[in-house]
Image (cartoon, rainbow, N blue to C red):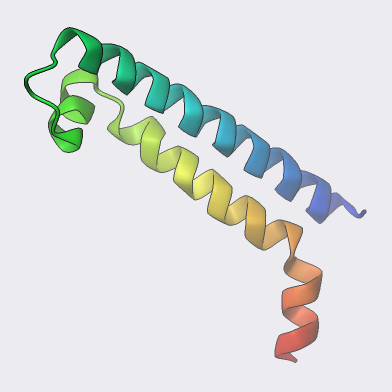
Length: 76
């Protein structure tokens, strides 16, 4: 594995971990507010919009970096 693939793996793993933690925070909040489970409303109430979309970005960039060599081989 070269450095790009290792960095992609780290980014993907950190994105998955952050994504899971954000879902745990949202689920914890929903358990207190059972009558208002609208996902966007709960995300705004817990203020996890930025980390949530940042985790998705980490996962996408990490996947691209992990498979960069394969993507480049098949597109050229």
